[in-house]
Image (cartoon, rainbow, N blue to C red):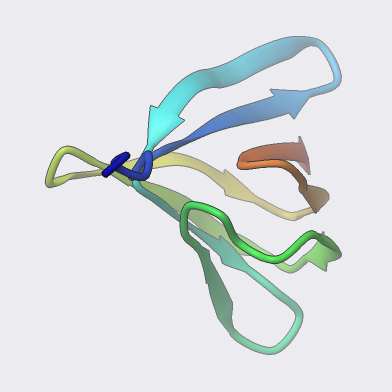
Length: 86
């Protein structure tokens, strides 16, 4: 029996640089009303971000990647791209 991958690739980008690129187990993003958590194999999604922290969990460790004013997130084939304005 094949095991499912329990992580996904994320790219957090701002206009002039890559803030983070790598694997994680979950990603929590601010939306206009609340927070949304992305897990492996999440349904495809395009969403505008609200103000707040972008937090990831990887191997049990929690890390704040950035605190944003606004941005966009794209969730695709077990991959997430976040474009941010700090």
